[in-house]
Image 1 (cartoon, rainbow, N blue to C red):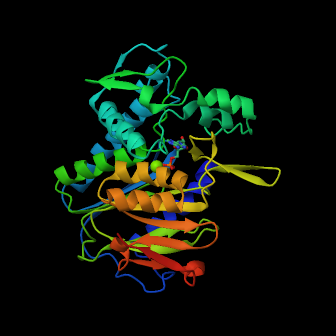
Image 2: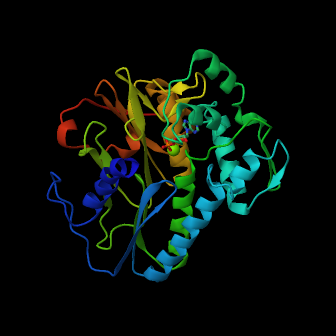
Image 3: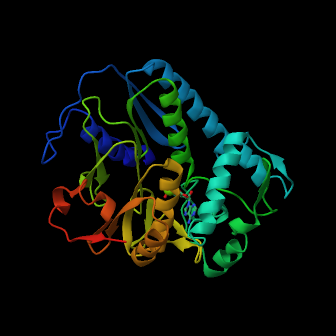
Length: 349
Ligand code: AMP
Ligand code: MG
């Protein structure tokens, strides 16, 4: 079920980056020559696809596959051998973690603070109670949510010199940032192996290295939240294109849809008026963190955040059908398919 829902995401990037482009209104050039090395694998609860051109492509893919399984093993909330599991079940005692876990957590905790807690990596007790980790979905009552929220506060997590302390009863979930961090590490691995052109799709988190081998930008699709098609296309080089959407993982009860992105202020699925948030930026971990956080914030707070921080661009799809983008991608973004006629607002600083 989960995999079935992820396949359209995988195809979205495949179709536009690859050579099957007859569904795109203005077809991009097909991939130019250059030896292509690819692998598809399942990790971090999602389908991952890696494509590397030139350089030591096959060796780079092997190293990246190893890296993915190592990071999955460190960061998983459910794997009893993971570092995060150990910290979550330490009874409040300090746990020494690896460089990767520490580095990711440090970035993530900083972004929790910077987004005013819209991102909160200690949300796990709430996410689990809703059933998003197990598939045993339920709508928790008000009292249950109130007591769960007492166990949510990233500021109480301590990380010093690679020693992580999660207070007793609290639990960390890096689901909002782990794929972005993994993407950054893969791109780094590719670069070191002399790969000059690559794109990876980690369950809808797309990251690119360089341009296509013919020198033209990658054309990456933004999933239509209401179907298997696309809402838009963005042309990028050396960028992460990372989307958080209410359509990615959800359940329905009594005609109401409940999705996996939780507003830490309420403990309920974020109802911010947005259905999809895409971040275009240099850093996967930042893109991943901000796609989740801006989904929680909603349009107005997202615009304020962008104006005060910068360093990234966004594409916001509203539940009312409006599309809002930042000026930096004005010339590289176009609406697509059913969304082609929608209102497009460009935000300037
Ligand atoms: P993403 O798909 O990157 O938006 O991440 C969503 C995942 O992050 C969910 O499946 C939860 O595991 C976790 N999560 C949900 N809400 C939040 C939040 N407000 N802050 C941090 N993590 C969250
Ligand atoms: Mg995210």
